[in-house]
Length: 209
Image (cartoon, rainbow, N blue to C red; front, side, top):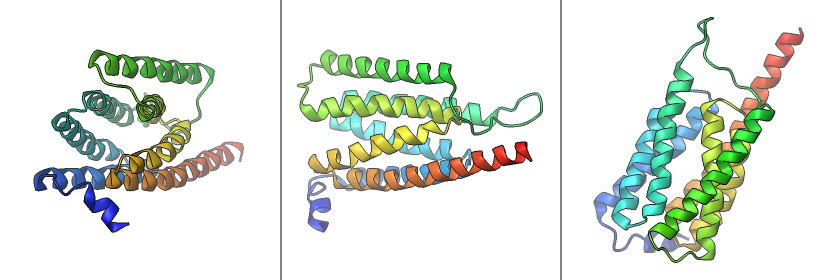
């Protein structure tokens, strides 16, 4: 198992390994912060996504680089959403999506799939089966980022599905650190969903009391 993780980094410069490790730690840290509804998830998450954009640019994965660039933009949007207050000086609460928001999420999912697909075409990538999986999970993650920015509990459902798919995908590609990261993300997303579900139930009970 250790050999599986180390082989992929035999010819990788030390500075890139360090950057990938920082992105690894910040990615996990940001999910833990999101679970606790802590706004610091966004600046910490930004460190992870910006580093990832740089590493993907160096590696020449322009399609994946653009995807992570979007994550960076959505982190700024989410940071703004979580920081702002309403007329009662309160932050936006955790809630469930309504019908309109579900439609918006689905449209965002489909739009992302088409955009990422045409990014591959534009850069003349040879699209293999694992790239189609990437395209699908990108749609899930994009919608999940939007739901999270608006504190919708459904964001965790999308993250759980996407992370569970990405774990074996990156293992297949020989990217051990990323595979391990997404495995950890899967369990953290499940724990976060349960935590947000508990918060929603407590709020509902306090309203009924």
